[in-house]
Length: 537
Picture 1: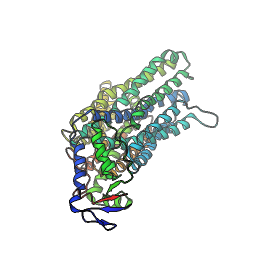
Picture 2: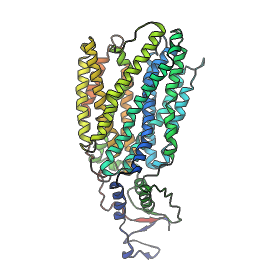
Picture 3: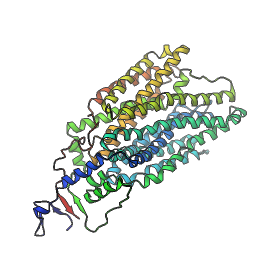
Picture 4: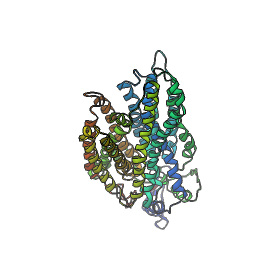
């Protein structure tokens, strides 16, 4: 009976399914989805947020730890106590390049193979690559910076996979009224990962203080221990979360709309909220519902319509514009703090090395606590009250203003002690409105506005556009910042960031408001008669 089509008007092998026995498959599908959309907040929702959030904690730790580790690497392996511009660029840009690849690859695989089957694979890649960095060495034929670039690229592939997978799993399991908070809570773990990287760096530097001060400045071996511990400890939270990721259930929406297994999806919906792992339906006869299938032709047809294509462009460009500034600042905060003279280290020789590392760690902690973390959680509080679009518009508007102030007023601000404090305040304000703004919403919205069969793929495309922005920012920052002298072009770079924030305002206008709407209402497809029949395979 393989391929046999069943409906109220179809017949196969001379057998006609009686009208009275016909089950309204559309109604069954709507009922299963409604149970997810209207489910009361439960421990299951908390568990999903924790499992997904630990991954983002790990991602942020591994991404932003290099901001401090690159300074340490400069003292140990650089010339004159610092890495060359290309070496610094290599270790910082390798991860975004890998992340872009991972977002596209895992985004597509999650829609083809399944969310559950891919979840955990990306974490294993991150753990292995992080451990590899900590054990890296060099030999006459290869420099350690080259080895780190390779490992950080591989780690980036794993980090990239985490974006579409965590976003889609969070959105597809969430009730409609709390979906924004679930997704933003998952993403907010990034702030704590950034904070943890700075805190661990501070602890490590303090622990090795006596060793750093007792060694000659030309050969600070203790600093070599510091960066290896800082990077290597990043695999610990990933190891803790791995088991839970490998045992997370498949989302009923994937089972329903991509695997087309109505019976299994209904069993899963009932089991998830009761904590029951239902397992796959291994019956000989499997009923498959007839719904739109993913294909290249179908993809072109769906996104070829302006109403759908403009949404994908809006999410992709908004993320691209945001990450120009977010990673331009985030991966270079140590450089900017040094450029403005914030906490300029005193002393000479080994004392200067220790003071510089301490000041960089403290400076990054201040930026995390004063701007990054509060921004994430204010977004969490308001995202299901105000909506995604108003928060993103507000964020881009404020960011345009702060970058204009920091960029065009750069020389005047850094010329005095009071001006430097004002610059740091604006810097923290910028971090705050990045996260209470487009950094959170560019993650949330692409996980909501696309059909199930393309949700992960389209989220991966949007996220990869962001990482393209991160790469452009990092290459541009490294190429431009020393024009006219050491760090002399930083103010103009901030002006460029202001321009991209302005473009983000216009791309946001292409995106629909998603607050209070089901994923199916947001899919851009008519849900009436979405199920066209059933086959038995």
